Length: 265
Image (cartoon, rainbow, N blue to C red):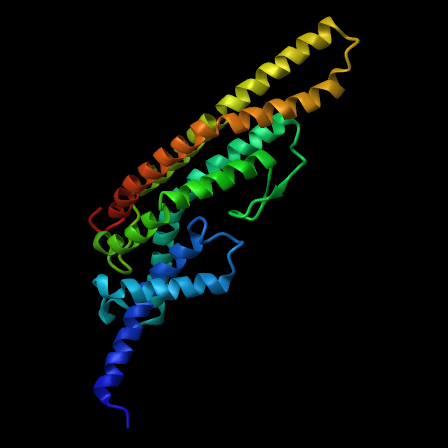
């Protein structure tokens, strides 16, 4: 016969794991790298369960945090998903900036149709965007950027209790600021290669007018591709420190954003 105390202990822990899992699973499914489409769903579920079991003793959650009514439970889950999505969105802004910069440079090079599959977002990007995306992912993992999420995940229970997420004007302002920073970062990334390609187009336009005998369409395409690839490679020394600075800034902004979604934020 099963001891009632042991049964209550088991149920208590299962319900506490459920409270933690409702926040952990959306965050891991939406965060970059781990949450990419190339990672199988079974692996994501296993990581979510393992992470929930690991952090459960460190976070102040109880069964009382879980609503008993079906409608209350649905609202509880929606609030946790929205909270995790907003935190994940900020990091995805950084990677979206890399993809945007690579796409613009790829079009300038004349490789707009030469798309390859992006392992992070699951869509087609230019080869330059692919190069920069892989460099950004490797930089993110090298500096333990994924630890930012796990740290923010544990600390988030001090900012926002389970099911107590509150959206305010400051939250929307923070999201808009993050989107603005995304475009600024994209311009910074594409600036060297974009400027070189711009001057290359201007020079070929002048040559086409002054020396019409030169088949500029035939000469210009391989020249633009060569210039774009050269500058895309040369700017890697500038790209990595820029990404490290943005990931470091992300680690400072996530706590502020999360704390602003608390009931008192």
